[in-house]
Length: 416
Image 1 (cartoon, helix red, strand yellow):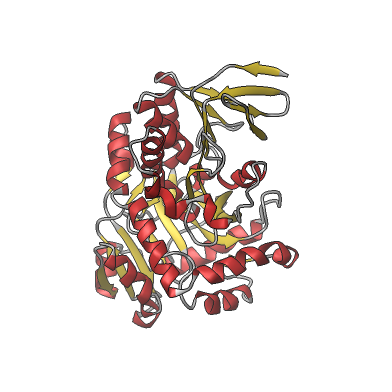
Image 2 (cartoon, rainbow, N blue to C red):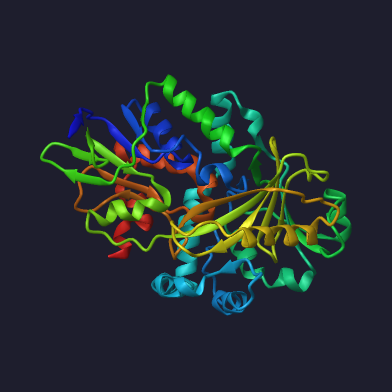
């Protein structure tokens, strides 16, 4: 087996979290090597909705959410779908999800998410400016829409929780909606405008530009899928089955594939892929001026440099199940309820694997009993938003600037 010498920090995963982590580590003066079999930011990081939501502190598991989830599961066109053949696999995750929805736990999760997400739009704006692509971070706010005030009221607890953590919002009626976005159809008469939130105009270009800068900073990228990790007396030995590399410290940023790596270290992390789809139009006839969210349908509509992206749905099914084109095309029907003039002809269909944990918190920080092993994965629906701050927190922790207690709420130890 070929073995390469390397005593710096190995970052496993070149998605946006891994790229931001490598960037912060390199800025701190540490030698870094990136490991990923795929091109940088080419997987889930390339196809996300682009939203930068710095106050998205309400977890997916909110009080009462299970009642709504059950009704959605019985509707084949709903934003949530679990194939009948996957229920037995999803059941333990759903049980933990239910426990995380207790009011006290929700408040704890919100505090932890606030610490992770606060200032995220500014963090990305700073990185983009350093990379010479400041135009990618847009600050025209986000518009979240509901059919009526009653539907908006059903999300009242989540909005109040976000406001308690500093979110500035403006309730809007039909007139204000059309002032902001004239193309929104009459099916939506109430909403919430978030003036301080933002969006990324092209997540793939952002990730590619960051990867190019890392190369200039002497960060080596190794196109390998790490399948094994072993601690020796001096360092870590990483392997892809035919080659091996040494590293003084390791940061696992492999998204939905991280669970298998930690399993080899004796940790069973309840990590699921919430398979998300998007439709992309290269030349749309309707282009909103900001992120528009059809909140009742859980669909994000984002104008991007390369066209219009329509993202949403939550589908369980693991990492191997092929994309479901029929499921993806449900997005077209949902979007046209909000933008009835939009022509959706022959869209590009994409599927990505959101790495989700049942309590909506990522796994961050050191791994107990495994000196030099660190985690930064499981960000779920806020991976892009949280990536810049995650990188900075991990770099500060590794260099000893951040006390270990700061990352305790995200520790892998919470899963036993």
